[in-house]
Image (cartoon, rainbow, N blue to C red; front, side, top):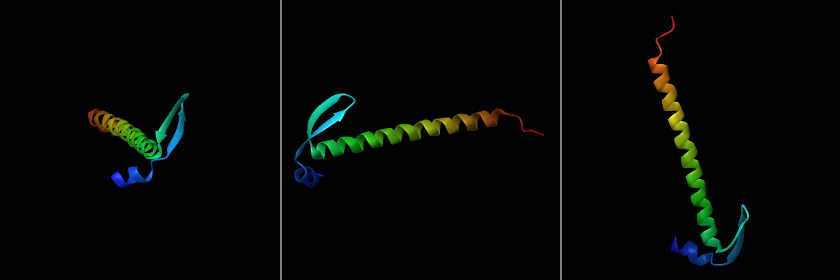
Length: 65
């Protein structure tokens, strides 16, 4: 991790949703990875919760027949 940060010290302009920030390239890449991880975890958690609700609902239904 330290080598990654040392090898990518060049400052870059990051513009997102009207916010303009000057960051080291390594920091911008790490923030992008972190944002991706959080979005993926959020979507995965929502899907798991949805499937659990469906399973609970189906367990309460009497069998058709």
